[in-house]
Image 1 (cartoon, rainbow, N blue to C red):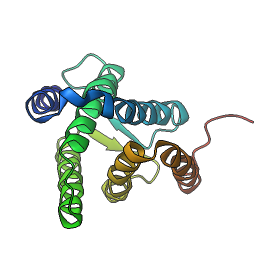
Image 2: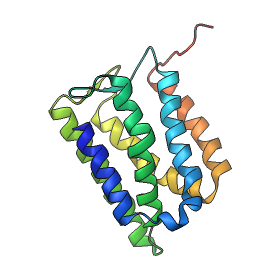
Image 3: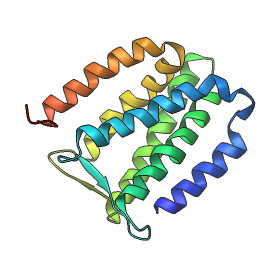
Length: 167
């Protein structure tokens, strides 16, 4: 499943992404990848979810495929096709949430993703409803997005009792 998603993300980004204006999107691509790497760092010993490596040699390789290929492709597709009218913006965000939650739901059915410590598909849906608007916010106002991200991270760590460090 993970290889299929990676190939599809690359194909879709090459086909429908606006690569001529990559410089407009690259910082948000880095933001999404960095936030994913931060998740791995903060939850290394207390993961909330894990993707399962069935045909790929390791969990780390699967995670790197998402971090450095799928998520940047998502960003360029999401931002380069972002509409201008309000209703179309909400439809666009909703479409991406539906794509992501649908893929995750299928992944869960077939054991490609497992949840821990109280995280579940409902929490993923809530997270996606925050994540996609945050990508747009980062594109428009990166410092504001970073500030809000800090509060989101702290809140999630408190809700799920994530304790990354022995203090």
